[in-house]
Length: 147
Image 1: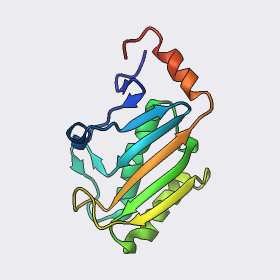
Image 2: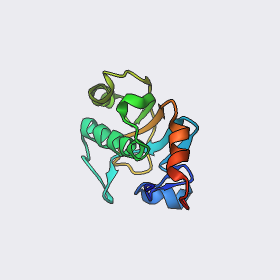
Image 3: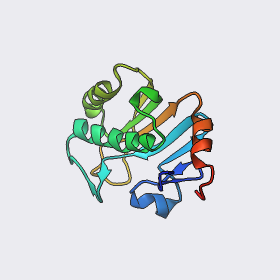
Image 4: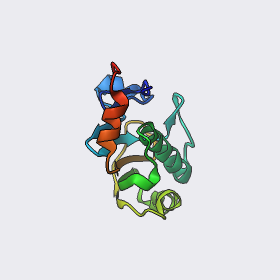
């Protein structure tokens, strides 16, 4: 059975901005999955206000959860992007990244930005993942499905 959050290769998340701005949490394109900017917005609230390390772990948790819908893990991530609102948080954000990706070492970018959509958010992340044969497995899993 197909995961109900997957619709035509797209994954819906739980952010209020997805419907408001018209985007998907993740989109599969061939053997690649691209995860939209993810923050520590979890269960209708911002988690770990004032803690860049824990906010980063939560943001990556949102992104990795979207990847898991496609059967992918942190080991499949080939690129990360981290947008932080203050340079002082770089070490803590980088430390969280290392905890999750030290074994696989994806290409990574960290950029300081003026702000995010909610001023309590300290970090936003994006993920790109790849798995050979993903497109075929997604096609096979959706045969006979209306999604």
